[in-house]
Each structure stands twice: as structure tokens, then as C-alpha cells.
Length: 319
Ligand SMILES: Cc1cc2nc3c(=O)[nH]c(=O)nc-3n(C[C@H](O)[C@H](O)[C@H](O)COP(=O)(O)OP(=O)(O)OC[C@H]3O[C@@H](n4cnc5c(N)ncnc54)[C@H](O)[C@@H]3O)c2cc1C
Image 1: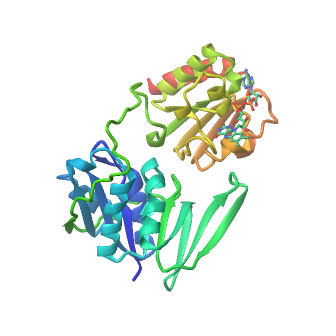
Image 2 (image 1 turned 60 degrees about the vertical axis):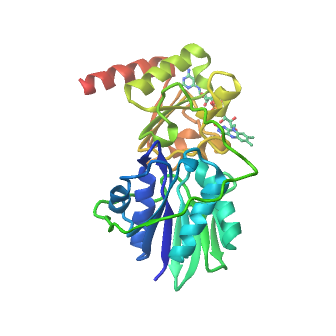
Image 3 (image 1 turned 30 degrees about the horizontal axis):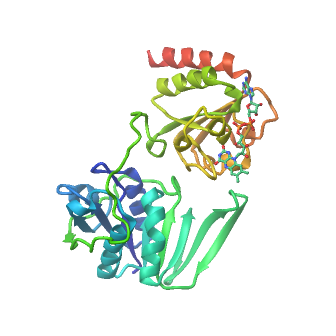
């Protein structure tokens, strides 16, 4: 039976939904499922890890692991992968995953693939599906090694109810400290805004918003919807939005339940970051804008007229 080790995505002590998505997929492939959780103060997390769908929980809990550092983090994953004799090691789509996956693959002598959206297993042979060249092509890649390390694209797999596993905790020894890079302090975004990666709804602003007044208007719509507030690159380059808000090929990849693109043309580099969203609503005054090719719902109109109407209607529905 194929053995899949999922690297738990933990943020501020809380297990993120992507871990359940990956374990659900592992279950649907008929694999033996384990999880590795790495960090500090993880006591009490084992039941959550089991109910997310794992049958073995490798836990590296050490004060030295409080701040993420790719070297020690990768060492913990390698330790768990060796103990579990994992065939596949899966990371969710996060900075931690992207930084650690190649290190883990190099240490295990395994193949490494990023941004996979699907996998098939045929008698220990793996074939992965991944978009490439800003989603212009879909690659089917046959993996020639017996072991695969992969980063799964956000929203690629769905979490299902009833995927619960059993509790069987294996404590890992703390890794050797990384002498090449020591993380001293983590500076977080202090804005208190919803992280795009965690948001169930994302509202993004494009050049159509013109200036700070337009940005503020769309930001209010995002607040009404309790949504993450994202941006096209044009508004980042224009100095209106911070770089960590950029959605797209060179920004963040998001896959929320609802993505609202306002005043965004739909350049291929933007689509690469959001066309995995479940429902897309676009507002654009140009009926020929390419964003309408991927939108489920489209409003052709001037955003300065449409957004206040949308806000009023949302308020009415919420009331
Ligand atoms: C290597 C590379 C990487 C890139 N990476 C990214 C990336 O990660 N993310 C990204 O977003 N872009 C990226 N880009 C840039 C991308 O090609 C586009 O230039 C950018 O996405 C355009 O942003 P926009 O849609 O906001 O602006 P525009 O393309 O200028 O579109 C503005 C839209 O607003 C509409 N509009 C104007 N006024 C109104 C109004 N009053 N009401 C309603 N609609 C209105 C217009 O009809 C138009 O469709 C990248 C480019 C390159 C070359």
C-alpha cells in the first residue's frame, strides 16, 4: 500500500484546512496516511491531526522550532518520512512548503514537484498533473523515482467530512540547529487584515480603480464581505497596494470560494493566481475584457457606480 506523509500546515498553533484537504485526497487514493507537525507548543494538537484524517502523527515540538527555518524544518520532515517509509511527502501551498520541499527531496534523493493539482498512482508509479507557463499548458509528468516530494496547489483537493483517522503519536527528536541561517525575529503584517491565503472570499482591485479613493471604495466592499483584500500587479506597481496583496503568477495563488475581480482586465499573469477559485465575479466597464472569459458572473459597468450598489444590496441581504 502506498504511504503518504502530509506535512501539517500550522499557523499560530492552529491546524489549517489544507491539511485536511491533503489527507482527504490521500484517503481517496487508498493510501496509508500519516502527518508530521512541526513547531513549538503543539501539545494538544494530536486529536485535531487525527480528526483531519491521519492514522499516525509524527510531532516535532521544540522551542527551537517556534520560528520557521527551512533547514531544521526539512530535517524533521526527513526524519518522519524515513520512520514512516513514506512513498509520497506532501506539502500544502505555503511559503514553508515551497522553501522546504526541495531540501527534503534532495536529502531523500526523491523527485520534487511543485504546484501539483492531481496525482494518480498505478502500482507504485506516480503521475502528476501540474499547470505550467502561467497555466497555458497542463503537464502530465511521470515520476521515475520511487519517492516523490510535492507541493500541492491551493484548492486542488477538497476536504470531505468523515475522513477521521486514529491517534497514534510518535514524538520526533528536535533537529540540529541550522548554523548557516539563524532566524532571530519574525515580523508579521501588523495591519490585522485577513490573510489572502486563509480567506474564503477575496476581493481584488485593479487599475480600473484609478486612485486611492477607488482603492478605499473596494476595500470597504471587502470589509462588508469579511473578505481578504487583494490586488492586480498594476495597483502594486502604482504604489496603491502592498506587494503581499498581489494575486497572480508573481504574487499569491488563491483559490477561495468566491473571488471578486474589480477593474481588473484579466491578464494571463493575474489569472494564474486566481482561476482555481470556485466562483468568480468580475466587474469591468469593458464587456470584451478577458476576465469575463473565466468569470462565472460578470457585471459590465463603471465600478464607481456598481460597487456602491453591490454594497447596498449586500447590506440588505445581511440585514
Ligand atoms: C512576468 C510578469 C509577471 C506578472 N505577474 C503578475 C501578477 O502576479 N499579477 C498580476 O495581476 N499581474 C501580473 N503581471 C502584469 C499583467 O500582465 C497585467 O499588466 C496586470 O495584471 C494588469 O492589471 P490590471 O488588470 O489591474 O490593469 P489593466 O490591464 O490596465 O486593466 C484595467 C481594467 O480596468 C477596467 N476599467 C477601467 N476603468 C474602469 C471602471 N471605472 N470601472 C470598471 N472597470 C474599469 C478596464 O476596462 C480594464 O479591463 C505580470 C506581468 C509580467 C510580464
